[in-house]
Image (tube, rainbow, N blue to C red; front, side):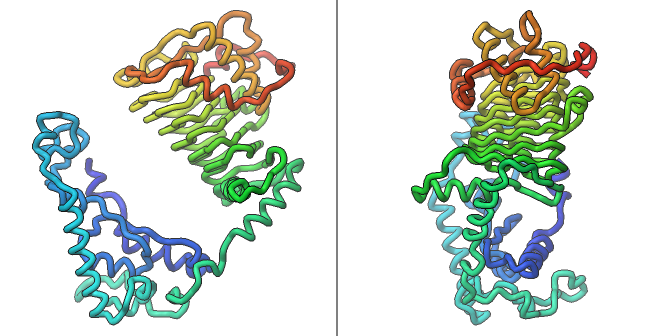
Length: 443
């Protein structure tokens, strides 16, 4: 609760630094900067435009226009004016109308026009980078005031397409096709690896250009943030090493495999950071090691196999399947409303958020589907943990975790997952590896 009022720095500081950094790097004309955070008046918009903003976000002010009284009870279901509540009695109090928001923004726009006229400009874009239009109030630290320099300006007549990345992406795309059989080094400053490749692939498909076969790239080292973010169908990324936060963010059909050798899997090394598969819609992720906190948060359709997770696993998950072959952190399944998770029977006690999820035994079909998935995991990562589970003669030591109010069906959830698997003529053999003790499996 205290973080609402006391966390963070003023948006003016972050906006100015972002604008200046992009100008110095020669990238400013390739994107739009959006700012929000308490914007209410025309003065806020003009000030933000001078500091480099192209777009402006309004949240609180819009709510106030339709009657919000800032009671700060949104999370308690007791909103006194009936906005943030499901209580029918409280919702009956809501008197807001769309015309109220329309009137607010029309008034705001008119005030902005008047301010622009006073400054002698025709549009907000003409103000971008004009720091000499600002001055410090008496007695205040002029932290935001930067001496005017032509290097800080983005001229209104500058073409946005001056540094269009399509050609660069195309060259990168063609180079990637030629390097499919070579493992490339990667380091933590390499962020969003695979995203540009996916974008170019989708552009080619949209324009009717045929791309033969699938694209597969291998890396070794420590990947930076957002490894495989928004990865498209038909792209596979294999990493021998570890990755930072946001692996597979927005995954959209691609496949990601992360491994660091048999010993790393046995030890339970952490190979993926926090917030993995945030908002993923489809695709597959195989990690022969552990993941960090908030694993598969807001996952809505992807398959994930991992060998341990931190706290808040599968938080707010709405679809897809997550299989955890190792320890679980506290608060597992909090806010989970869809999808399925499978956890080791011995790890499921005292860590599930029972208000949202419940445990259930597997049926015969699930046993087969899980074994098929573990075969895929072994295929991509050579995981000894998955191989040991496949070598069991009895039932798998897994249990299903599903939402308390599960709206879908087990079969329907698995149908979309199984459709992503490639058909193989033979069952994948279990690698010849040293056995893992029961203690190590659950460590």
